Length: 130
Image 1 (spheres, rainbow, N blue to C red):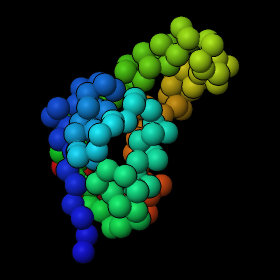
Image 2 (image 1 turned 45 degrees about the horizontal axis):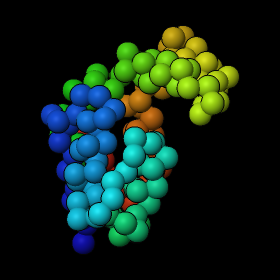
Image 3 (image 1 turned 90 degrees about the horizontal axis):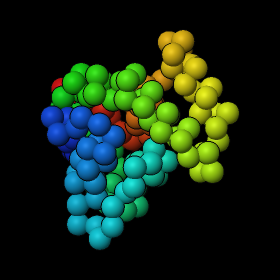
């Protein structure tokens, strides 16, 4: 039997609110929360903690999908990378600069597109856009 999980994009408008929603939906009942990390988001989708128990089949309903495409789009992604440039001891600056350049050239992925790519890597998750 397929499990259904819903993300309410009406509560998402930036990276922090995305992770707030993810923690509310996926980590409900767990005594710790995911940090604002795409790697952590990917790990969570593999299951084993939170509401996903492994590679069980999931229908993931994303309410407000198109709104979030804009919310987590180019401008937010540019700010995301610029913030990383301010922390050279924590991040690979040449990589960040390359990602910024790709974004500015129209060939880079937005934060939203990266999230979608991560979800699509999980064959057990069927994303339903609403």
